[in-house]
Length: 277
Image (cartoon, rainbow, N blue to C red):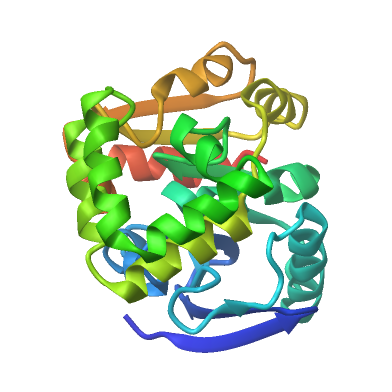
């Protein structure tokens, strides 16, 4: 699969991206924490005939950076306003995984009339996980979160304590310890969580946008995923827009790989939903 690469910068936000695919329609993709633009390479093989895929490195990942924190929704809108003009993009679809969905959700809010379809994998940012809210909700909690995360000898016992209090599942504890086992990863957690903390939507507001603009939405979840509470999506299930949901038996961090193995029928349905717009 042949790729080209680009970098777009605007007002302190600089994002690196790859471009591949032979389709006439555009798909904007955002990976999850600790990944980069290559996270969707295998999954993208299912879509390259129908889409031209722009797969971005999130800020603080790969070759992307930001001097602004937190990112405001207006920052994201201004960035993609300029990017869409430069690339002559009028309409687009979205693909996002985990914390990358915070950018996707913001684009849904800012450009709903330009969206063709939406594919969300265990999306963060539709409502907020209690741990994320606790860590980033106030100036005091943000300072404490930053200090503890950068000093793992304080943080890791707290993660275990959170598991004992059932605030964190055993699966989450194992994943968090894996992400926090070196200084670079710990620093990235702080940067990403603090920068992305304002990029979210109430589930009911998000569902109303999907309904109002009739945006076909495909959601794939990981069974028993404690990082992304499934209850946040009840408003979407009860909406009037075209909504397709599938739950896979896999851990959160393997969801992209497992989604790439879904049947051709799933991918045909997603591609056709874009054509219907």
